[in-house]
Structures are given as C-alpha cells and as structure tokens.
Amino acid sequence: MKGDFFMIEDRQPMKTHKVDLLNRSLGVITGVRDVVSFDLNEIILDTEQGLLMIKGFNLHVKKLLVEKGEVEIDGKVDSFLYSDVDDHNGGKKEGLLGRLLK
Image 1 (cartoon, helix red, strand yellow):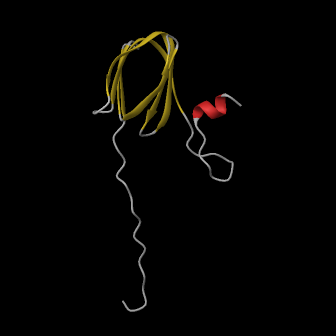
Image 2 (tube, helix red, strand yellow; image 1 turned 30 degrees about the vertical axis):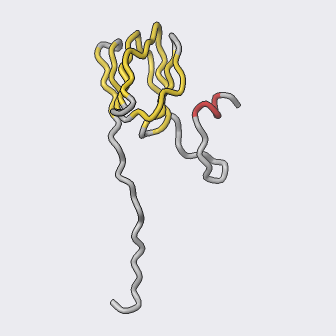
Image 3 (tube, rainbow, N blue to C red; image 1 turned 120 degrees about the vertical axis):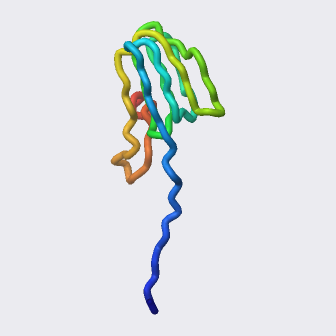
C-alpha cells in the first residue's frame, strides 16, 4: 500500500447516560458530570449527552454520587429538556443557560 495514508481519529468512547423515572416522581439519572443548579421547580444537570433541564414541582436532589456520576431526584416531574449541542454561530457550542439568558 505504498503512498496510501490512513487517518486514525482519536475517539473517546461515549459514556453511558440513562434516565429512569418511576411514576413521574422518583428518578435516577446516570452519566451526570455536574449539578449546574436546582430549586423546587427546576434541576439542571450537565450530562454525557449535554445539559438536561428537568422541570416540575417540589423537586429535590435526594442523592448525588459524584464518583458514579449518578443523581437521584424526587418530586413531580413535568418535563425533560436537553440542550442542543450544535450552534449556528460558527460551530461554537452554546449551553442551554446561554440561550435562555439571551
């Protein structure tokens, strides 16, 4: 194969991210990098799949296992919303908070 060049990309394996919700009230989320913010109506998590906004009523972060990347929540969950990782500003990534605060 003289003259052939192969490009090998350095790819990181994607880490697992899972949302498990029981009766809209007890949830376990894995693949969590950080808890960005939380209050009784909203929890924002930085996950392996982007920012995740959880909206609801009387929400609590019951357990945070940083070393496992796991968060346990309770309360009434109304919605899950993931941020869009691609942006139309020259390919730069913009977080969910940045878009919300425009």
